[in-house]
Image 1 (cartoon, rainbow over the protein chains, first blue to last red):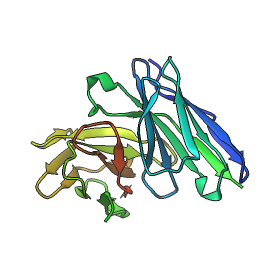
Image 2: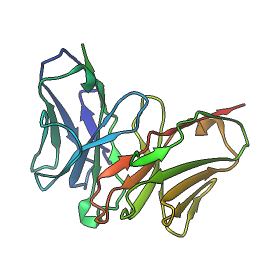
Image 3: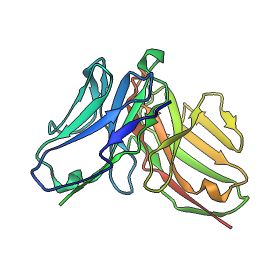
Image 4: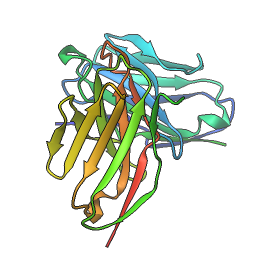
Length: 115
Length: 112
């Protein structure tokens, strides 16, 4: 039973560039949430996708956008990268149909470094 | 005020010790709560859900006080392998929408 998979594992970009991160949810899950984790901090909620739509969003600028595909996989796009975007980006999946209080399962994350 | 607050520690304890972590949250409408564990440079992993009546899983006991908006985690008989960061997590708001708000995390170091 495949868990949550994310790609790439590491990425180095420069300021002003754009990046796309990818996530495949755990088998049987229909909801994907994205989080940003800066060094020494807890993960911060970016947004959540369900039925191919952004269902809710955290306090992140429009430079952060996403997409969910019919197979439930998801992408996170970040435009006009800033140094402060350097972080671990985590994808988590869950089965919303069983209620939003179900635990979320996290992927290994993508470590993004901005130079 | 932070949405979910934890003492970042670090907590340095000897093997076999009992250690308790506390957490407070600001949204009184929130309905579900969790403790996650995160090892260095790894992803968070669910340790346990937290139920209103309190719940236990082996050496781990979680408690919830809704009136005080307070969550705790007790670890008994600490093992070296318990060394990690423990994240207090709140499913934000009354609708259990899956928007998880994390505390900063509390670092535990268990020493021989």
